[in-house]
Image (cartoon, rainbow, N blue to C red; front, side, top):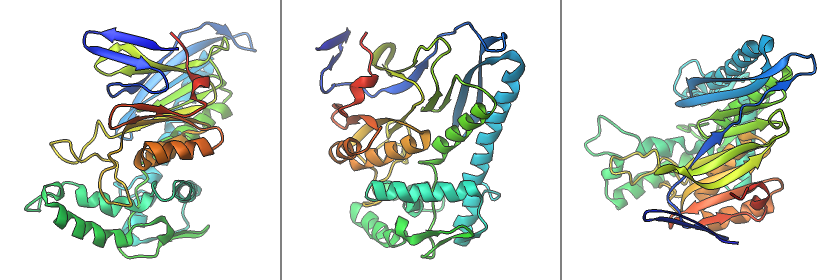
Length: 352
């Protein structure tokens, strides 16, 4: 079956692939009135707060008496994770690890984040790698430099990348119960590809502990749901055309799943927007084979890391990886604006 959407010169054909303009995630929520088992009506509550360089939205259906405490507890838990995983605040454990190269008695959260990240690095054959921060530092703006890194010729860039690559690699970080340490001087980590998803998972766990059974958390496109909406209707996650948000490109129906998108089309190192912020740790240059990758899987931590890893791997390797994994689906937009989708993605797609 073929669907054709037309609006002026914009035309989308959905088949086994799509020719599209870059898209982003938005969430459609329908307000419902439901009665809880105690007889008190379940009411829809929504709150947004700024954190992790984005806006985090939490939607719950709860009894009025329990809603405020549950929302506060969920946001507090996310802030706790952020304060541990930050590499910008001197009080953060990840910051201290980067400064000292070692951290004694790390928190359970940081240890779990590191161990999960090492597992994801193995899973993606090193395309997801939290030790790539020194490479990111090369591309970051340097107010004292005569030329920014992106302004250098390719040969000069390659010399610095080759030298920096010697201290990059997940095999060079050791995580033990009592300590985490780097095996090479100058190593640094970034948890930007996994911490946001982890914070979402932790917040959802807090909500569940407080008796919430219907919830959605959206941390700047890192989305996870708990259960369905109260009348058993699935949550609707819609991909829309960013140039005209009245046009949809795909509509996912999910419950108890995470949906996360990684893309290089919003953040760049350079003013010309040629150097995207997602680097290939194997080359030291921006990953350029994809525009966007959306992952659907069980947890937001897993989805967050896989979205980054698959983005870097590119459509062919990335799709092959997803097809080999259980309970993981993907939608990949390559740099030719062709969409590749995993074989099980249709199970989440709605027709309109």
